[in-house]
Image 1 (cartoon, helix red, strand yellow):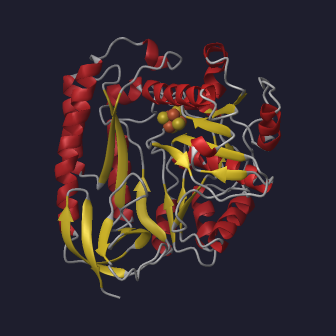
Image 2 (tube, helix red, strand yellow; image 1 turned 30 degrees about the vertical axis):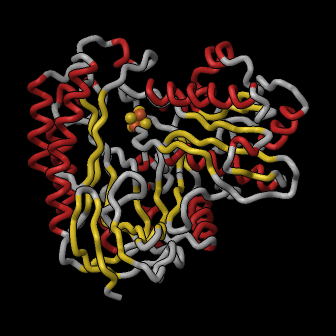
Length: 459
Ligand code: SF4
C-alpha cells in the first residue's frame, strides 16, 4: 500500500537537443522509479530536461491514483499544466502513470486537450511520443507495453540524493485487500530475477549510492511467482554481498507468510539495517477479516513480537488504516491499546477512503469520514508520545548516520531507524560544510526535538 506522497517538479540535468521537457512527479517511491525511468529515456535521447515547467516545451505529468485525494491532486496538476499550455507556456502536455492506467476513458473524456496519455508502460517510447506531440499529434493508444517485467531497470536518472536510491525487485501484488485498488492498477506480482536486481544494485552503488531502499507493492512476496525461485531472504543476502553497499533497507513487507530466514540475514549482515516497514493495518480480528488481510489479531501480535526477539534493536515501522468498514469504537480502542503496548518506533495512520472499485468501497458499515479523520488524529497523537520517548532514548548515544543533504550550517542525516521521506532527520551543526551527501559519520545525539534529533560529530 502506498504510504508516501511527494510532489514537485523534478530537476534534472540538461541534454543536447534544443527541446526542453519538464517532468512533474506525484505519488510514492515506486512511482518515483517510473519518473526516473522516463527522465533516463529522455536524457538518453538527448532531450534537455528542466525542472521548470515555464521553461519547457513539453511537460510530462506522472500521476498517482491510489486514493481519492491523490486523484484530485493529479487532476489539479493536469488542469494547471493545461492552463500553462493555453497561455502559450507549453507546446504539449503528456499525462502518464497510475491515473490513465486505471481511469483512462474517464480521464480522456474529461481532459481532451491533453496531447498524450501513457499508462504504466516501460516508457521506452516516451521520446518518440514527445516528438509526435511536438508535431501536433494526439496520442491515445497504449504504447510501450506493460511496465518492465522480469528485467532490471538500468536507464534511470536518479532524483534522490546519491546517499540513497529506491529499487523495486518486483511489480504488482497478489493480495486482495478489500480497501486497495493497487492490484487493479499494477497487476499481479512479477518478480525480477535475482541477477537483474543484483546488477541494478551494483550499478547504483557504482554511481555513488550508499543506501538502497527496497520498495514494492509487497516485498515479502518476492520470488513467489517464480516456481522454485529464491525468495526475499536470498535476495537480501545477494544484495548485501554487493561491494560498497553501505545500507540496505526493506520497506512494504506484508506480514503474513513472513519469510523468517530474513531475520537471520538481517542479523548476519552489517549492511542490512535492523529496520522493517511492515504494514499491519489493524489489530482487531474482525476488522482484519473485513480488510481481507489474511491474518488475525493473534498472528499479527506473534509476528511483531518474534521480529523484536530475533532482531535485537530492530526499528519497526507500520501503517494502520482507521475507519474501515467493520471498525466500531471497540475495535478502534483495541487498536489504540495495542499500539500503546507494542510501541512501534515509526508509524503512519491513514483514514479510510472508499474506492468504488475496491470491495470495501461498496460497504457502508463504517463510521463517517469525519469520525475516521478523528480516529486518525487520535492514533497520531498517541504515536507522537511514543515517538518522542523513543527519540529521547537516543540522546547521549553514539550512532552512525547517513548524510542526505547539507542545508546552510546544518547537515541533514538519518539513523538506521529513519527511512527517507517518511521518518525523522538528524541535524548536525556543520558550518564548515565538512559533511557532504553520502558521508557516514558517527555522531553523538545531543537533543531530541519532536520528530528530529540534533547531534555532534564524534568521528
Ligand atoms: S498488500 Fe494489500 S494493500 Fe498492499 S498493495 Fe497489495 S492489495 Fe494493496
